[in-house]
Length: 159
Ligand SMILES: [Zn+2]
Image (cartoon, rainbow, N blue to C red; front, side, top):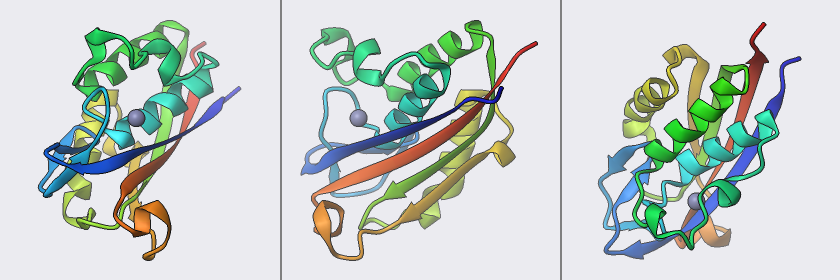
């Protein structure tokens, strides 16, 4: 069996916060609001991983009421989840993500994000795909109020 999991997340854009996406800081006058570093892309991947392995969701594992996760580096949370996935007898097949963001443009940062995520997941870069699209000026993304991310992950049961 090759279980798959889906992940979705969104965060509000506010002044005075860093914009972290896939563990990479993107130069921007607005950043994402949240209890942790609000890395929306990494959160979507975490939820996809947990979903594929049947292990619940990010809120159960890292409650935003827990002081330990205040301003947490989401790549550390990802590493924790990855360990749980691997010890549950799975390995990662591929990861595909889409960031939905009006500005700044993600294009120039896509390679850096891909490399960072592949390293964090211990995967070949070819199996980690990062895509970006905009909100076409409509909805909360289009109005520049927030950023959303979707992820899908495929696992393989280790024999
Ligand atoms: Zn989140």
